[in-house]
Length: 47
Image (cartoon, rainbow, N blue to C red):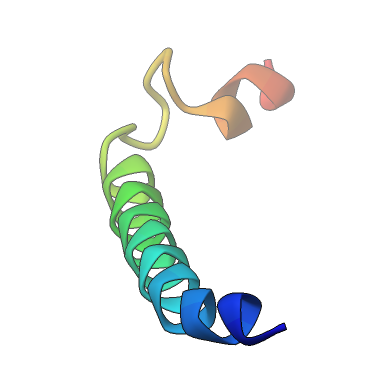
């Protein structure tokens, strides 16, 4: 039982790193496609 408790801080650190990576990826994804460009999903729907 004590082993799982010892592993918890390491797992939390990994999760925080993963979440931070995902947040930066989302910000990059939002800024990349310009409105009306072929990469913009919204413009594809309106066509």
